[in-house]
Length: 160
Length: 462
Image (cartoon, rainbow over all chains, first blue to last red):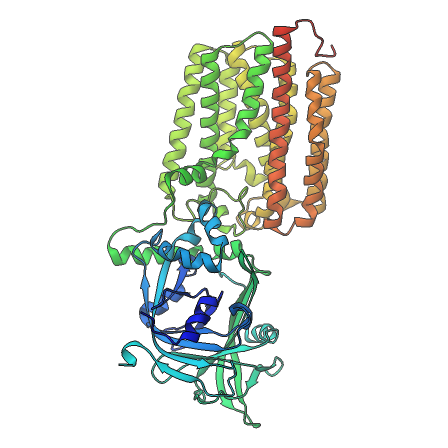
């Protein structure tokens, strides 16, 4: 079931990199560039255990945002979006649980599959958790400019 | 250990100024982060960045905000590269011109040109350990990173490096066969026993290097250097590695005793005892040979004369020969050069752990000169050995590998400070030892074949 406006879905599908922002214990926003993976309903990101501090922040405070702002990373598109949502860390099986999203990841980063085949070279990179973001509110700038107010769309239970 | 270099507000702003746009982020009243792309003017000297207030949104005055710049270069069919990002945090206030001004307080970022991804990963091992510890506490059962048994065995034992053993052992066996001594059972036991010796050394090196902090201090390991790192990665525990090392040493000792029982000789006993002392003492206290700059000599001795003559005397029942000893020398020099080159990327971590290897002690120019002199000596020994009649004429085929040696010699300086660039050079250097060894082996195969099918063909100059 699609939950996001169509242009936003297309941006998510195109984006090689977006910015995940989490909130730390001091209330400070911390931004991490990551590959957004969209399955038609929720936005997923994955994090190696090597770079897992963001997961600690999410466990403490699940309110996050995913923004897509870089025209270079979205195939030249100039529209921009910030998706606010609730995040959940899925870490049942760090070794292979994340691989269910591999087909979407591979579309954006084809080399990941060949790296995975030789995971012996960098084993901890492939011990990963999934971050599942359930969208709540979307801020969309059709022209990408902050000089115009974003179109705000409520999603999911926020919209109900 | 920091995973990225220390970055202060000024440094962060300097980097931020290089990005064409910036992502302004703050935490909204409802607790969700808000991000919007702005084009900030960066004032590094004033430790500030100013930008127009985004329309329709309320940036908290005096509240914590951040500006992030990030960059990738898409690579169709591959993914992307040139990853870098920086975030500067501070507090925002309305400036005299009506624009918002962020007063920078702190910064963080990563640029893979400054800290390559593999080093960044190694520097982040502590975070991974912390994560698995927390997961284990949460579940009440140990949760560890995993590898398939095959990959884990390969990584833990560093199995591909067995060529360092196979080359001298087979060569020793063939020279003994040329001298009329060949016994299939003891040949088999020798190969297996020698392999156990090297596996024991490989694993115990990791145990002692970990105990002495050398492997933990090394943040630039490569495919060929820096140990197996299975302890650092949490794949195998320190105790399991120590047990495995003991098991390999025990297996090697049992086979050594069986060989002594079958072919008793004081020479074999001496070679076995010296080999054990040099192998264990390579990293283990009190000798710690590699920590004292004697690693190359220990490796040359162990994987040159000791392995080759050990295999030789098992076949001959204790008789030694000059030509076997001469044949072991180029192999010894080239195997020592494997260690020598592999120590180059490790030198900072080694120095930190008090491991005074030659690349730690010497300048880069001296290290490269040392490589060239040693590799020339290896070829000179083969030529002299052939001219003097100790080695067979076909052994001159090793000269075919000179281009590989030149490739290594020429590749060291340009990659001296780039561990990942040096990886290809290290790979060629390992091939050099293997190919020279195989060509020497082939030379003796030719000698044995000629003796069988065309006796009297002169394959030695004397």
